[in-house]
Image (cartoon, rainbow, N blue to C red):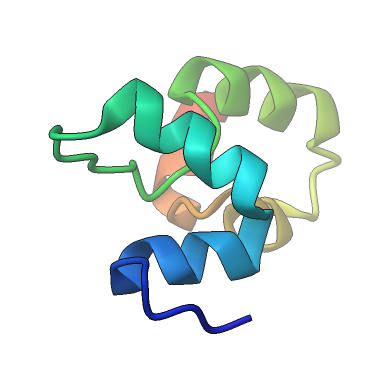
Amino acid sequence: MSDDKYNIIYQELIELIGLDNTLKIYHTYNGQQLSLPKRLYSKEYVEMKVKEEYDDTNIKKLAQKYSYTERWIYDKLK
């Protein structure tokens, strides 16, 4: 759906999440600048999940899964 009555960012959001959800975002945040963190999950949550999922062989897999470095994962397991 390409509708030139909307600014490009709103056109992209409409295509991604639909008009109703775009309007909710617009009415809640219009005039503000949004900056979204690179990582979806909090460090605390990732630390907990890493400790649950670690099996002595999967540091690299966990680092990729949660977008942290292997070193960070290793440090949290100490």
